[in-house]
Image 1: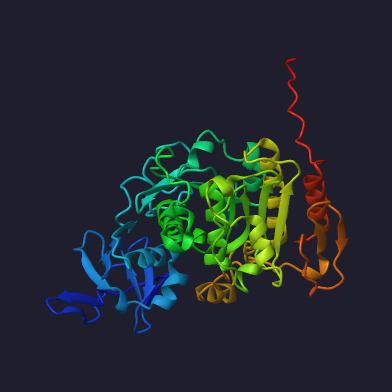
Image 2: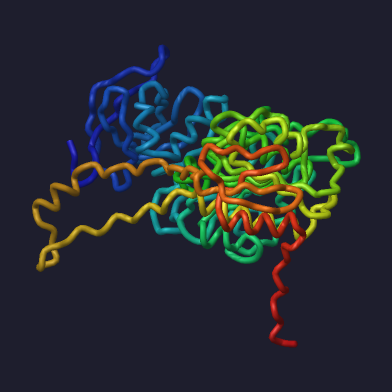
Amino acid sequence: MRVGIFSVRGAWFRSTSRGFLFSAFLFCPLFASAITLTGSNGRKVDFAGIKEARKGGIMVQMVPDGELIPIRWEKLDLNALKEENALLHAAYNLTREGETVEINLGTFAPKGMEHAEGKPNTPVAAKARWPGWADVKVGGVQFLMQLPLGQPRGILLIAKGYDGNSFRFLMNHQKGSGDWGRFQNEFQLALLCYEYGYDSATVDQAKMDTFGFADDKSGKQILDAINQLAIKMNKPELVDLPLAIYGTDRVGAALAYSFTQWKPERVMAAIAVKGAFYEAEPTAESAKVPLVLSWGQYCNKHEIWKTEDNAQKVFSDHIDQPLNWINAMEYRGRSEIDLLSEHFARKILAELIELRIPDKVEEPKPKPVSEEGEETKEDEKENLEEPEKPEPPQLKEIDRSQGYIGIVKTGETRKMESAGELPAEGETFLPSLKVSQMWRDYVRGEFELPPPPSNPDK
C-alpha cells in the first residue's frame, strides 16, 4: 500500500545458500527518505538505504538500522532502473566489468550531512584534490570534472596536449571565466579532463599512446568516469549528456578523432588541432558529426611521427562521402600549437555546439492552488500519479542545405547548390554562413586574436 508518496513494503528477497529468493511480504514502518525501485515482478519496493553495487547485485537495508541484504540485479527491472535511479543504473554498468561501487544512498549517507541543494540522504562527495573539481580514477587514469554555472546540458572533454595530462592546462581555471567561460555559462557544459603517467622522453614517435585510440580502452574509461562522477556528485543527468571534444596535439587530437568514430551518437562536435594518427574509418553516423581537423600549412609533425594519417589524407581518402567535417588549414601555420590556432578552435567549436546542442528542458510549472491556498481533490489525485520521465537529450542534425563549400588553398567560399552536393578535391564543407566567414579568415591569414583586456589602473 502507499502512505503519502511512499510505498510501504517489506523485504521482498532474502539471501540463502542457494542465492536470492522471493520471501513473503512483510510490512515495515514508514521511513522518511525511501528509495523506490521496481522489481522484476513489476512491484515497487522501498529501501531505507543502498550501500554499494557489486557485480552480482546491490547491498541494501530494508529498514533503518536493519541488516545488509544482497539483492541480485536480475531481481530488479533493469529497464525501469534507468528511469527510476540513473545513479544506480550507472553503477550497474560499472559493475558489469567486475567493479564494486560505493553508492551510500539513504541511511548510508554521512550522518549529519546534506547534499549542497539541501536534500537529505544523498551521496556526499569526498573532499576533492582541487577546489571546484571532482575526481575519480578509472583504469589508472585520473579524471577531473568541474560543473557549469547551472544545470549541465552537455560535457566538454578537454583533451589538450601531446601527453597524458590535460588537467595541467585547467588546474587554475575559475568556474565560468577565462577561455572556457562561454562553454560553461552559455552552453552550460561540464568540463572534463584527465591525467596519467606519460614519459615524453621515452615515447616512440612512430607509435601513438593507446589512450589516443578510443576504441582501444580510453573511450570506455571516459564513459565509465562520467558514470562514476555522476554517482559521486549526485548528478544523474550526466550519464546521458552529449559530449563536445576539444583535442590538440599528439594525444589530444587523435583522441578527439577516434572518439568521434567510436561513439558518434554521443558527440555534439569535435576539434582536432595539429595532430595525426587519424586511422579509424568514418561511418555513416560519424560522418554526420561536425569535426574540425585543423592543421598548419607548413606542419610536418606527421612526418616526424611517421604516420600518413593526417588531415589532408583523411579528406582526400573520403572525398566521396557526405562528411560534415571541416578541413581547416592555418595560413602559414607551423607545427606548434599557438594562441591563434587555439583561439580559432575554441571559436569554431562554440559555433558548432550552437548548431547541435539539445534544447534546454523546461522546468515543470507549479500546479495552481485554490484561493484558500490548498490543492483541490483533483490536484491531489494528479499528484499521486507517476511524473513523466524526460526524454534523453537529442542532438540536432546539421542541415547541409544551409551549408557552404570552401576552397582550402584560397579561402574562397560559395553557397551549396543542394544538400547532396559534395566538395571536390581541395574543397571542404562548411555548415553555416558564420562558420564559413570564420574559416575564410583563418585560411587566408586574416583571422585575428582578440585585443588584450584593458587595465583600468594604467
